[in-house]
Image 1 (cartoon, rainbow, N blue to C red):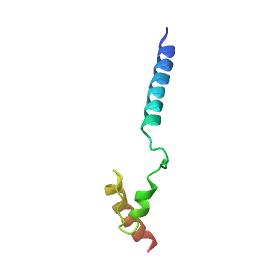
Image 2: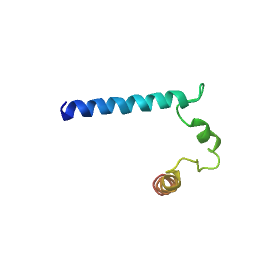
Image 3: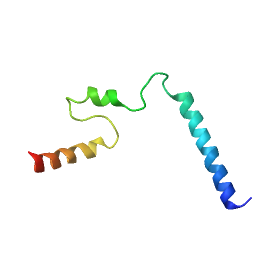
Image 4: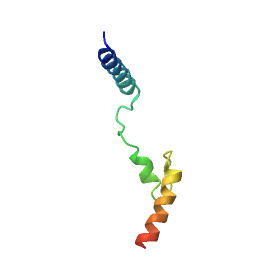
Length: 68
């Protein structure tokens, strides 16, 4: 087997493992996005995702400096 075949086979095996893991660990009737947390945190202004502690303050500074 050459490198291309090994590379493609490895990619498909990793994809199938990830898909099976996702399928067995997902919530049966849950959404694919974390919309509920954004809706519940809309009034507080700081949702929970990992990068939000850095992105949201900069977004607010940019927004208020140019549009208000």
